[in-house]
Image (tube, rainbow, N blue to C red; front, side):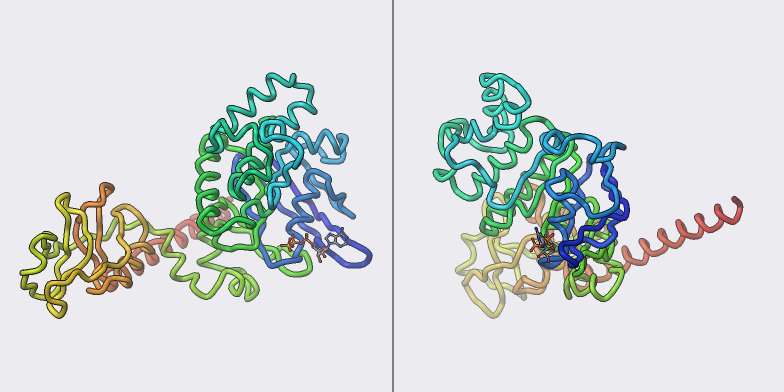
Length: 371
Ligand SMILES: Nc1ncnc2c1ncn2[C@@H]1O[C@H](COP(=O)(O)OP(=O)(O)OP(=O)(O)O)[C@@H](O)[C@H]1O
């Protein structure tokens, strides 16, 4: 959908973006990630010509971005920035309606569409008449997203849109964006300096290095498994091996039965080693241990069956008994898993993935030899 070809931007002798060549696929989220000052924002802004490249070309849907007037190009793409960038003297509805109004849509229909969009981004209709300063940071960001979606553009450019809100709201906004994207299928370029955000949101991740150099383009899974160089492996972080477990589901992990204890029986109970204390619905609420007669020992994180090996390992490591508690979708106890079983399953899956990759590359070699 968007193609950078040998694109550079030089400011007075300083290279902000260095011969960037990159394809941004249609209908997917491509994340630009990297440390501060490495040219992510500049690269993003060259797409809608808020910044003009010094050299190279950018095509959008096959058309050279310079072939149409910059203001028109800009209006054809949604743009969301840090701290939302809302106009303070306009109401929420009028902020959202801005681009449709510029495109000639009547005030009444632009506002009607704006009202629908409030709902799409999870805001209640009565916020429409407020001014940006009367909203929380998270609400302002949602309005920013609604405004970018108002003209239904195929492309969304998002520049650190969630970096000004606290971590809890940020996580909510990230989840919301993924939910929206499942319905909308926009072509999104998302800039962040947070590798966890990149891994969560990106279908493809482009890692930028200092000097505006593109260091690697890969899927999140590949980036954590096989960073291209020392810079990338340093940037993706030391616990990348652990985070990589987030890409394996727990299909091969069988929870073992565990002794249980009803919460009412806890005071008088004699527990052999460890037992899971459950409520009337069979949901775990903690542990009873031989060394902690009559008291409820708080449990670790719970592993929901069907989620990832990362969550299973975390449940086992954070459990006072060393056994991770596995629950079903309703939060009811299914059994437990130990760290050893999770690691063994991770090893098995890694070996399997390696075999699959090597058979794909062998098939590729054979095909090219035959060809
Ligand atoms: N208008 C400008 N004039 C001069 N230099 C600029 C201009 N805009 C950006 N730069 C420089 O270009 C380099 C890349 O900036 P850019 O904003 O693209 O980086 P970034 O990766 O988005 O950083 P951050 O994560 O801090 O936003 C920086 O060294 C910056 O100082």
